[in-house]
Image (cartoon, rainbow, N blue to C red):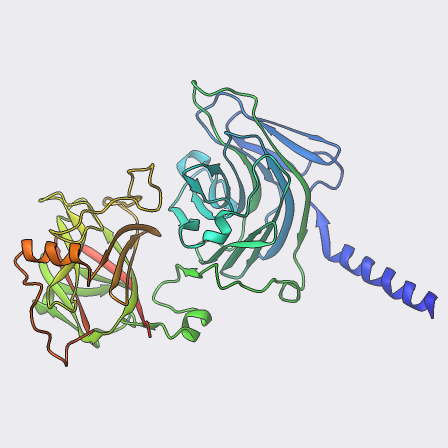
Length: 427
């Protein structure tokens, strides 16, 4: 019996070994190639060591092989003051920015004002897709100066990360399905000291039978989806619903009628126009993507409130120069997720921006690209005073049929595109 049990254990060990493989099998870097800058890489006793040099470019040690769906585990240790990351499903093409490495990056950075290690950054393309602004537990997972266990699952459109067993990212995105894996040494300026190091070891990858080995998703790591006009299974279970089906204007009205068109999965507004969603909402969480051009002059998103005021979230205002995300005429926006950073991480020139509005028990939040930019209390004295100053009496009677109901409209001057408009009622 003991021999039978031992044989079974050995069979299981062999099976696990067959399913995973090392990314440095020969204790050398023959399966890798360097791209980008001039940082140095070497391997010692199974540890890849990246050393920073004075170079404005980021440097990447890239696998020669490409990977689509996989589970990658490794350990990382980095010196203080040096940024790094792990590229997955990444590319380098001569026709794209002279071969610049681009693609999903699992961030390795413990700046004191931004604990986003384990978040997902889209290197060379869209910027931050999943900062840890909504995952406080994930922010505390990484230990600077020590060996940290990293787990990355990329299965279909789902990209998830764990640091030391704590889930950090829970991203859904379909832009790139396959590419190389790379280890980054961030470029440093002339005023920064070179010679800082990042170390990677125990790089193990699994590409078969992935569903049997995926870890469960944790509630503290909210799913952030960048699918276009489509809900995920998790969003369906949370009772999200699309306010635009991608095919018709059912439920919406455009003023004037010819000011809105549908092209390439987008709602396009031109000239001075308004797009109104007819149904009122109680407390809710709403999100959508918006894109502008240089010809776009202004755009805002309107919603009602218990005082009967018409509140508007500024998306673009090149005329009055109100910053994006502001509560129009009342509260200017600022980066509340990174107190030391004045950048709102919002593009008024190109690319899609994710807008998020949350209204819950009188508390309202405005978010741009996963950065909180405005928060206020509908019932608070400060907000009531702001309404009075703007000409809305704070003691205005509330129609019982309209209490706790919200309406959505969209005003624009100049071309503006929106897509992936989705909402869930907060009960």
